[in-house]
Amino acid sequence: MIGKIEVINGQYVKMNYQVAGTDSRMIALGIDRSIQWLLALLLLFLILELERFVVKPNEFLIAAVYVLIYTMNLILEYIWHGKTIGKKIMKIKVISDNCQPPSFQQCLLRWIIYPIDSMIIGLIFISKHGQRIGDMAAGCYVVNEKTKKLVNVSIEDDYRYVEKDYEPVYTQLNAMTEKEEALILKALYDPNYVSQQTEIARSISKKLDLEQQESNSERFLIQLYNDYKYLETKEN
Image 1 (cartoon, rainbow, N blue to C red):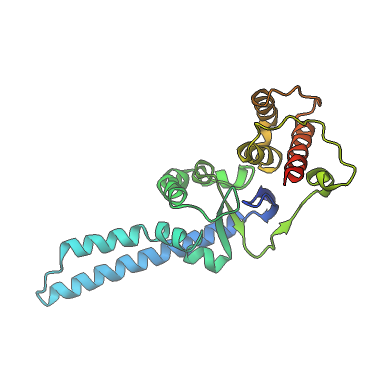
Image 2 (image 1 turned 90 degrees about the horizontal axis):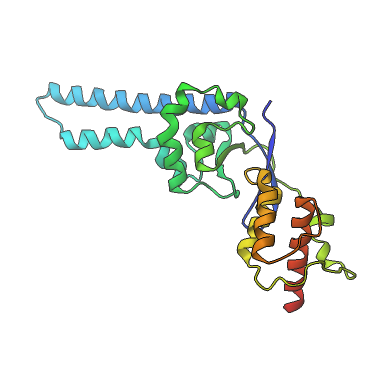
């Protein structure tokens, strides 16, 4: 059974999403494909009707319309922020791994890889977050809009630096930037990065020339994040 995913948005807030079920995705796909076929058949009918009246349709225009029909879902998914007609009806949408609507490059990658995915559609059933190959390659998830997004912030871990008696462990963090801060948050809360916590912790400690006090990488990253935010607050 496909459950929930936890991702972190651009404001560094953890969000829970209900992953769209395979049934709703298949129905949405069926709706989209049916609309495409109906539009293609309608165009064919119009062409035949025109030829009956000895009016030769513009071949370039016909080709352009067929390309538009073929790429309809790609275009809609981008301009409708992760939705197509089928997805709108089924109340599901595509999101990036940072909670934002998918970029055009992500939509294009999902669209290009779809022919491969269509041959192994069962991957959605067995993948951890209900992703097909196109989703994984593009860094996207298909989520259920009907499920309210839940903010899941751990005050004890994430915001200890606001406590009056907070004492930082790592104080030499002048070389740390927002890039490292974002990487720490991804390592802690992004499913695509959690498995890399040890490597990320080692990389950051090496860059900042820190001796890692905690043996547990997750605790080290939490401590480092709190110390950085504490020192940043003091400077401001």
